[in-house]
Image 1 (cartoon, protein in one colour):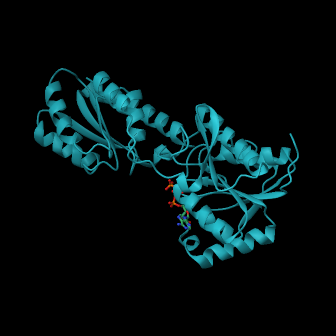
Image 2 (image 1 turned 180 degrees about the horizontal axis):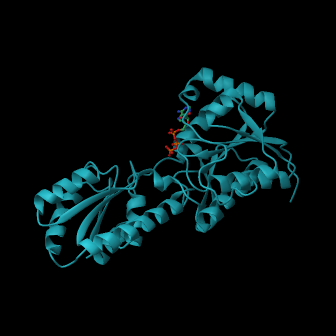
Image 3 (image 1 turned 120 degrees about the vertical axis):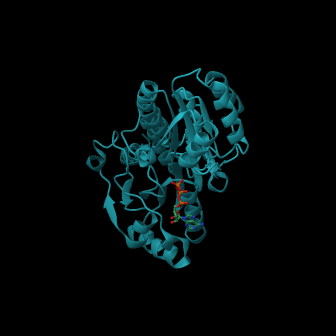
Length: 327
Ligand code: ATP
């Protein structure tokens, strides 16, 4: 590979953790080392930058991590970085290490932090989208999403076995405070009968009428509820179903934090590796304040200011597919 003019960069993982972050760190480090760039990792997101909690990332430091969930750099939300004092402390660390560039792996909040830093410091900054929710503009898939939906599908397959044996309806709550993309894809992938999403405001009543129309026609049913749906979560939904349909044996399963962990899928590892590789190439080519995504298998560069959550985007055809196939 061509040798770079930048000499040293920093890297953090920030915000919520997601499987595949390690694969991305590994790709950043190995691409840097191939182009004679040194890499310093800071622990616990922006907090590590403020406190100069760091590790020199050599090739052996990123050996045997591609398959591991979580992040070797740990992650955190840093209220101190939301203040000018915190940002100036981070800038002192950047100066101390003589960093020319920086890679932030995180969600839209982490990119806002990077933008705030760029206003006070001339360092080149790029980002890789790390969040299980897949709710960012500028990429087909965020790091963590594919693993999370596979974890949900695996869990629902198991729940289906017991639901089928006992003729039960299970309400399964999945992650997604603002976006129902985990619910949408995992509902189709697990053959769920119905789902409730934060993006659809009128779906609870139609769920009840749908369930009434199924009566006795199926022995097991799965209803997937995104945690951010306005119905208030799986327990409330289950109570309401029991009230409206007292003959049904209704149970609840809240999947919770298992959705954040686990070995990343192959697709995750590949996407995260591509993003990490292109993050370094972007720095070398002089880009800054952009998020590296993958759109139609090609690298895509979205300015941080535009890499925001897209909470309203529904996939009408996918919703229709679930309605048709779940009947
Ligand atoms: P997730 O999608 O998992 O929530 P995120 O990156 O969106 O990830 P946030 O908690 O929103 O998570 O942001 C992570 C960190 O980025 C914050 O704790 C804070 O340190 C920094 N940050 C966010 N917004 C700003 C801002 N406007 N100014 C400075 N720093 C910010």
